[in-house]
Length: 188
Image (cartoon, rainbow, N blue to C red):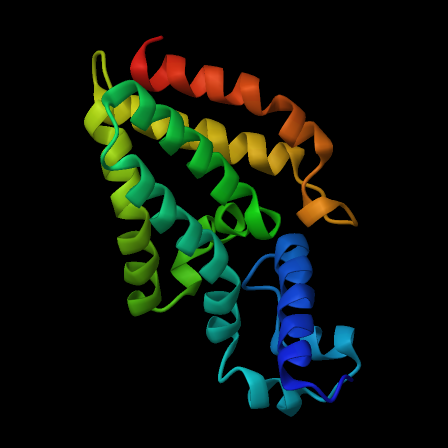
C-alpha cells in the first residue's frame, strides 16, 4: 500500500466505486474493499470512519458538479436553462460509474441524515427542471424521465475497465437520451 495517505485514500475510493457499482452498496463490505486493496480492514478506518463516509466521498464529485450546474443554469432563460440542466444532470449521473443510480436503488440502506443530504443536493436541479415541465401531469412526466435515465445508465453501464466505468455507447447515445428526455419533460 502506498505510504501517501492522499494516494491511499484515492485508491480506497476507486476500489469502492468499482465494487459498489458491481455488487451494490449493501453487498459491498469494508472487508471487500480492504481485500481488493490487499490491506487489513482496520486500515480503512484510518482514512474513513465508515462505509457511509466512503460513499459520501465518492458522491462528492457528482454532487459538487450538480451544484455547479445549478448555479450556471439559474440566471439563464428557459430554453438555455433546460439545455444546461439536462447536459449537467446526464454528466453528473455518469460520473463515478453512475454511482448515483446504483445508490438510488439502495437508499433504504443509508442513514436518514445521509438520505436527506443527498435529496437536498439533488433538489436544486430537479426543482429547476420540474418548474419547466410542460404538458399534462408534470409529476408523472418527471417520474417517467427519471426512470428512463436510470434505465439507460444501468443498461449502458459496464463493471469492468473503461473511461470512468461507462461504456462509450452511453456517451454516443447521449444526444438520443437527451432528445427523449426533452420530449417527455418539455413536449418538444
